[in-house]
Length: 386
Image 1 (cartoon, one colour):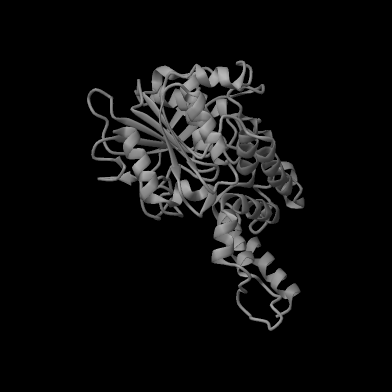
Image 2 (image 1 turned 30 degrees about the horizontal axis):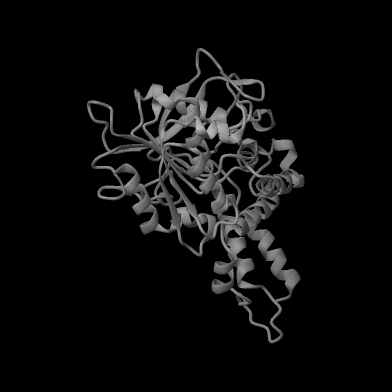
């Protein structure tokens, strides 16, 4: 098989893998927020009748004092725990942390994980039908920020009758939301647990996100964001695939890639060592899987929101803002993280005066270690909740 034939085969695989929302709600619950008063967005405009999809585990005690809010990363969703089943194409992304006897013990805690504003797994986002119409928002979905997402999280807390969360925990984008919530609504938060996140997106992080955004919107099949009704097998799958490959490069470490793949070939072996490398196949596999379950418009919207992240914006200097936080704080970073390097978590721990724990996760897996290193993350969470 020639390299050109392999490339054609890859494209055909990608074209069969196009995001489509599940027809089953699975274990999701739904609540409608901002029905009488629209959510005013930080960058202008508004959203009304915002639907939030969320999942829960455990039971809220009579005092309402055992609630834990779990906030997911960029391509996560509300299915933080549980098997792959109807309505849930993948197992829970934090199965090893949430459940009876685990670090977030559902025999002790009432656990809530909402799908983020702008997402594509039940919460209002670009693929949702725009109120008053019969068509998805598409290109009409407004730009949002992490603060807008947190405004929805705050309103969800009220809707669920949660006056104060025992803990809020999030990694990566979820950590950004946890940090903002501690600033925007400290009365709702007893403690926050932040993993592999930062106080503000750096130039390098913005650059990485911006390139991914550009690969999606430059795909001829993006159609300005209005690609939902163009037919099966269409849409910006090629642009989305490249974005995911670049993301996976930043999520993992050089050490893992070299020790796991090196210059190994995938499939047909050739004598001169030139062919389809195993690392290429790994990246392609992740691209296909994401195209099957995630909306490119949501990827763009959420990436822009992450680029906007800066807790000091409009509030003063970064050190001043972090020093004003009164919520009990627990921070963990990954020593091999090249996307959100550990100095950023160290900065949080150094400047937030209520920091009680700063933990280093030792791993070869890079940024994704907060999803992979089950024992170390469980130890961090257990100490934080203890």
